[in-house]
Image (cartoon, rainbow, N blue to C red; front, side, top):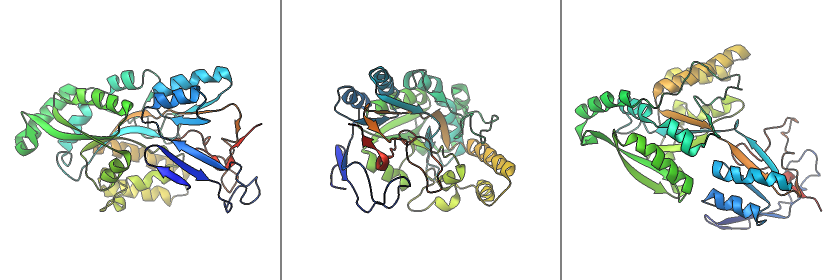
Length: 344
């Protein structure tokens, strides 16, 4: 790392001791330096790409993606996929109000998912029921995300507030909605989702800078938030986010929900060589996650990566055994920077 200005730009330079490239000489990274620019408004980032101020951009904003798609007509390289990550909301079960499954169910039922798909997804994002898209062998077709059922939220809220009056005001459950910003799209998501919750929840906005937001999530200082994660081609890699052992002062199990039955499924699949049994185990995990009411699945995250016509090598990365991941320009916004080069 050469320099960094938080929330603006980070500059990295070539590492002469880079340890691995199977098709390059040892230590041979082709670009001398890369500057990463942060755009809290993704449409501005797409505009900078359109104006020629950037050589590449990765975004999960559908507004920006629709701008970037048009650049393909001018020779820009546009790569998109929604198989490498999921977008969801989650609740902190280690403290009120979401330590009570009635509050978690009520919020799930009150989630305005149809509005989310219309106003945030703009008809371009695929609705998600679990962490596994229909193309995955681990997809469980019996798991359906509950939402847009406000009539089922009302009696649960009334019952919860009757038992926990200190956690309610005017017959509504008090909750905090945390998200990272400043961000135009995150503000919009807050508005859409909180509008659905407002009849049953008193929603307090808590916008933090992204690094603070991640820290607060890890130490359990939140009630409810939206997140992007999961989607590993082999779900064993995602097991760490949901097992009991991942709960501590700093947690990777963000909702801090422990279920020994779920752990048995995750660890049982890890040690199993029977493919059919592993697949079934993860289908059962998806059902278990739904029944815990700790996550509200929203969409399969669509990532767009757009590159200058002269940039090459974006998808050339290979694992040491020669296998290839999804194109490294998408799936979570990462790039195969060690293999990139410019054509003269």
